[in-house]
Each structure stands twice: as C-alpha cells, then as structure tokens.
Length: 554
Image (cartoon, rainbow, N blue to C red; front, side, top):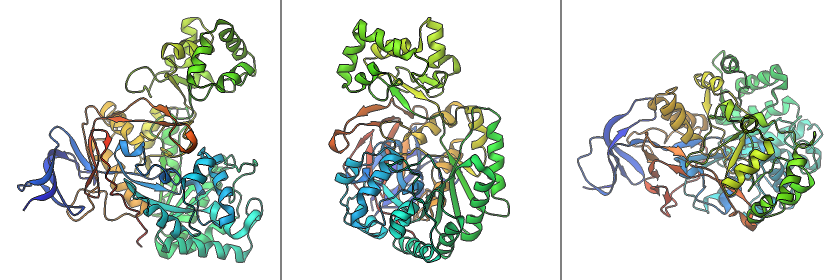
C-alpha cells in the first residue's frame, strides 16, 4: 500500500537531540507513520538525498496576531522552516475586546509593535469579544502554518477596568475578574498568558501600557488561575531592577507550578554572556521551570535610503517624504547632497551611534557578523569621509537597496555563544509581524543553522534542531509535534545544511493600504511540510493551507 508522502533518503534529525542518520520518512493522513527504512512507495515523494530532514521549527515569539488576517501564508517565517508560531506575546492582544474598544487595542499594538493601526482595523474581521472567539476567527482563515496564542494582560486589564487600567491599581474584585477571564481564555484554547512591565512600551498618548505597574499580587492571582491548567506565563520585564524582576519570575513559577518564559539578552561586553547564563540558571534553582529566549545575533533598527533615515534635519525630512525613486534622484543633486551632509554634521543631528551601525553588504546573503572595522564610522574614517557621505555613497552605489543594521541588542557574538550554551536559554525572539518597517529578524532560525551550526559549531546539528523544535514545543505545551516519531503530526523540514541561509531583506508595500514592511527570503530549503501537506517547495508556497489553531490541552 502506498503512503501519502515519503521523504526519501535524507539525513533524519529526530528533534530530540539525536544526530543525523540516513533514512526515509513516511506520512499518512497528516501523521508520521514510519521513520527509518520505508520500502513502500509514496503517492508523492520528495528526494531528500544530501539534505537534512527535521521536524518543523517552532517560533515562540511572534506578533502575527494581525498579519494573519491578510497574509495567512505567514511570511516571512514560513520561508524559514517555521511550521508553528506562538502569537499573543508581550501582553498585547486583540482579545478580550468589547466592540467599542477595538481602536484602542489596535492603537496600542501600533505604538508597541509598529503594526499599522489602519492595517489592523481593516485587515481583521473583529467579530469576537472573548479570546476563544478570536481563535475561532483565526481558524476560519485557514493559515498555512500552525498557530497557538496567548491572552494578553493589557487587553484583559482594559476589559475589566476600562480607562482606569492604564494608571490605577485593581481592586480585589477586579483581580478576581481578570483571573477568571484568563482561566476562561485558556479553557477556550489559549496556551497561556502574557504580561509586560517594560515602561517604554506605550499607548498612543505616551502613557505606559496597562499592567506595566500593576501590583505583583495581580499577577499572582492570575498565576493561581493558570496553575491547575498547566499553561504558560510569558513576560517582558524591566531589568533595571534585576532583583525585583527575578523575584517576580520565581514567584510566578512557584505559584503556577508550570512554565514561565521571558525575553533576555547580553551587553556589548564579551563576558556578559556567562553572567547572563548564570542569572537564568539561578532562577531555576529548586526545580522551577523558567526559560529565557534571546535573539541569535545583534539586532536593532534597519537603516537605508528606502526605509528609516538616520538624521532628523529639514532636508532629510523632505527626503523621507519621497518614494525611493525620488530619494535616489535627490541624493544625486549636488546641492541637496551638500545640505544632507551639512545637516548630518550638526551636533544634535542624530542620537544613533554610528560605530554600532553595520553595512549588510551587497551579496545575496546579508553580513550579520561584520567586525568592528566594518561599522559605518570605521568605514567612513577609512575613506576619509563623514559617515553621512559614506551612507549616501553606498546608497547610490546600490540604487538604494543597501541596508545598514543598528546593533542595539546582543552586540557581542562571543557573549551570545556563552549565553546559548545554557540549557535554560534558547535562540528565538524574531518578533515576526511586529516592527515591520524597522527590523527584520524573522529568519532567526535559519541564522542558527548557518552561523551557530555551520560557521561556529556552537551547536551540533542534532542539538540545534532540538532547540528549534521539541524544546520550544515543550515550552508552549505541545505534545503532538516537534519530534520525528510515528504517531506525531507531520510538520517537517527538508534543507541543505551546506547552503541554508537568510537572503537580503527587501522592503515591500503589501500590507493593507500599501503600508511598507521588510520581508526576507531564505535559500537552502527544499520543502516544508505542515500537517502532512507540502506547504513550501523550493522556496515558494504551494497554496496548501494545512495549518491549524493549536488549542491548549492540559
């Protein structure tokens, strides 16, 4: 009897930490049915000779909550082997939501995550009130990959407290209401609850988002509702008071008896990685289940002639109002060029440190690991130019396509290597769906394979794949995928370990209303299979929409 699909002759990487071994994979009715030697033919076969065959990747930090409404293919993560994405991070979600409050939640998502409010309001159906209704609406979109969601503190707090949610403390009755809503949301399918205590995340009026300064007892009341449901608590914290944040994380983990997740990073000091790893591991003393995630490379803003410009002067402001063709024409004009350089030389022209801005190169693959001598200031010094002249010259030479990345976070790869050696810290934090015109980190999983496996050998292939598959699946609470084993869901990647890489980001205008966003293709992926159906083949979507909304199961 023929199988639905056979992936033939690849190097099987099981996702549980096992190293590659030659074999076949059979799939029937969306499930893996055989692993090893498969003698029967498949109605469809994928030749995986010379390729790795792994479980699909699990991205546990996205903000695709809005984008899924108009892009059910979920690009760019679906080009990078992601078969399951977790939404609802950082406390900002679209449910629960009273009909009159949708503009407030959309505006909050715009200011916190740089997702255009117009796109949010016009690209989603907004036919729900509770979180279960939101998941039902997502289900009807037939996404190309699997989606799991968390209910966010900001929405829950505003639903219960109204305008008072922003700056006031909750009453005991309001705390109970919030805990009940979170419990109900999990019972309807949310895999957890997310909260945010980072003051720079603000509403359109500049005030910090609801919950930022909430009494910790409010979170403990919610944690008590989560405890019998074995769900996840995700956090964004203000580590300016590290002792307070550490205590809060430990209290959450003790109260829930379950999984607690937070975002973390390293400084520019190469020694900071070991210190950060020890901090996270210390949080877990006593058997607490606390995990940190961090971006696998330096990240911040993407600067370029076509997107964000580095100077706020009047001539630069006029330039920013033009389309790319207009900008290219303007910088060719000698008078305009001179004015741009003069404004850039002013003492208060920019707050961006140019020794932290790196040219991403002109090749097919961006240079994310350029050395200090390749930062914009060093390149300008070597050429005897002001940095703005170097920026404009490279913009001309690349017809405006040249990109520069400001490394605000995780600037030291040496420190990151030490951080990622910890069993309690995982590469992630791509923020897909958010900051869409400012950053492009959605290819983070591909970078793990190209840099931390192929280039540096920090991870073996087996260990890297475990950290991209079964480990994050455990954090989310998924029991039916993340490992290549008979009976589990057939989410599978086939890729060439020698060539897999991120391609240069591109700015496109495909959001509702023509709003811009960066996308990023990948190279080296032969196929991505979602629930047994080939979703992406040789880098292109097949039209299959086999993804599912993965609802919480205790």
